[in-house]
Length: 322
Image (tube, rainbow, N blue to C red):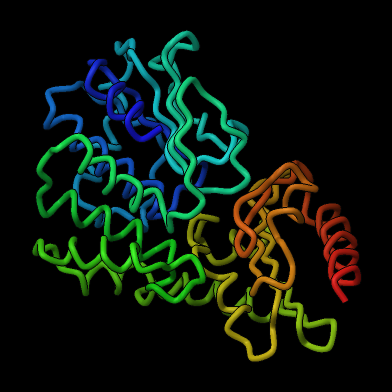
């Protein structure tokens, strides 16, 4: 399948790149890296995404804020990156650039991906789409620069939790090590992704931690944030990246759930597990998915209705695992 993707990139001339809603560093890092390589190959690229202000340090991020580049485009191919299913795709931007009859290429590492598209390259063994793109660029025999390397590294380090998560393999380290041969400020990437928060983001985290509840003898942790929480702190739902991992850092916690109410009738949910519970299946009960140890879903209802349903499902799954 890698060969098919490479052939499609060589044969076509114009591309629209897409990813999932509320994109993380794997989504945007891989999008920017692929876009830069395609442009080096003489292709025309349209970036279709809302972006994320917290990731505006990524090289080439300014390209994401140029929707006018897409308005007159009629791409030969649409490439979805890090998007487990089309329901998760970011469709909030101007979609006039994306035609339904264009070639659909699906590049992803989520085990829950159903293989949509004309060409689907799904590799759950890869830590991230960034790791997959390193292989793709080698197949294309294109040279990369420090900006491309920085985006790939951000992608990998984000989805491996700084190489601490279970999806980290020897190949992951090999790819990251090769990327470090380029000078791109590796310390800055770690700082921006994992350590640096604004004061308001820190206050929002405090609210999430105040909501923390433990059950099942301290093995299950749940946190939540309401629309009121976001409004009172003056920050958006995009400022919650990594909050669910704070619950997983508690000694004895095996499963964590974080629910944020991002609109009056919309909640986004993150699940984490140490492997005893398959949270991909748990998220699948609500139309979501991801990985065995990390997944998510979207619920089109207010927090007051979503939370009881989520707790019922979570408690049932935990009970069955005992």
